[in-house]
Figure 1 (cartoon, rainbow, N blue to C red):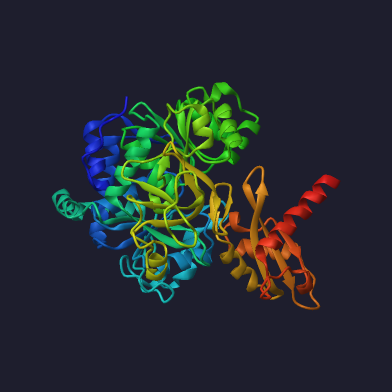
Figure 2 (cartoon, helix red, strand yellow):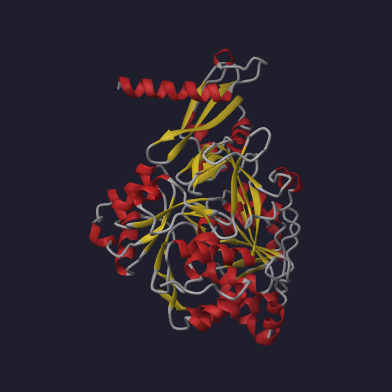
Length: 548
């Protein structure tokens, strides 16, 4: 049994509404921490009042660097309540990427965990802003990040301009609850709630702008396709800082009063224990996650016996594999992107298996999807493959990038996805691949140009070409073809170490291949023929595999 669509049009109001409708229902579970909807609202209100006391105002951008844990949700809803915008930053970010994102987003405040795996975020911030030692809370003056005035540390102690999460909470008493409500009442449905950075066809990531009302509405409709209710419990290991988490899974489950069972980072044995102990019913993930679960020593169908539905993407055989591994017979296939609020089309749990394996479902309510001719942009008949374009619940554009925004929409306001596909006679969407050079590895979009730019900074590189090649586990794995300057030999280990220092781990090429200038294929105009180069590499790898 599903719920009625929420009346609230902002995320802050949505939480208040949920706290009334599902007061004692569990909203968030993380390790030994359990919060009901009413408790979550109480924590969010305290933190929102603290942010106001700190001087954060409506319209400011607040960066959030955290893994899947309650503080991410508390901070996000608090930021939403005061009319500020959450800039969700990947926990894979290197110091260079962190600096770029904070500067590009013009964030006035950053909320961060100390570290995760080999990334030390507070240390990186201290190195980027050494002025923190001599500055006071709320008055950071950084040469590297001149707009940044506040650093909130979720775990570290307060020092200089850095204030600890719990110390900040004490500042809530400086702002009355009525004052928070007055601020919250001024937030509008069309106000920006998220800036989510995603890789595209450009060298640098793009900050996708998402608004309160559309996150709620589209999230609700995504949940309806999964037939979610307040009895559902989502195993939540996909990162909250990705749109698949924050603009999809989160609003889909919460608008139906369900529970978010957080796993900080994915580890298959721990995931199986969480699924079993918390009786999780909803799966969000890709084929690589399902393979890891099946191969885990503790795997058994008994561990996943409560799984029912969820979302995934992939080839028909991948989706069938996921359904069998999770015993989730109502898993739904989807189509969408960050720019379309996570999903634009979703299968329904009641669709026949054959339909869910081979199509991405019908457009969601309010979504218009059509295929157009790649050159003329004229709409195509049903069944004809072209570029998929989407109108309705789509982004208003990219933060700080008017040129990219203008080039991403056609004259009628349809978003140009860069994806190939068609609309079937049945009205369903059929995805047929990517028009752009985007690499998708382990479910993550990676822009080749960003990696190529980093490789070109390496002293020994003359030319660099990056692309993805088919991979049974990751969908695509990243390969770099290099021409090295005269008299140098390629030291793959040194190059990989350099890449790990400059790029998030999932962007580091798995293999480096040397080519001389004469060996590089060219077009009739003399330019390097990158598609042909990619084809050559794929054929060479197939040949090597058959000879082994």
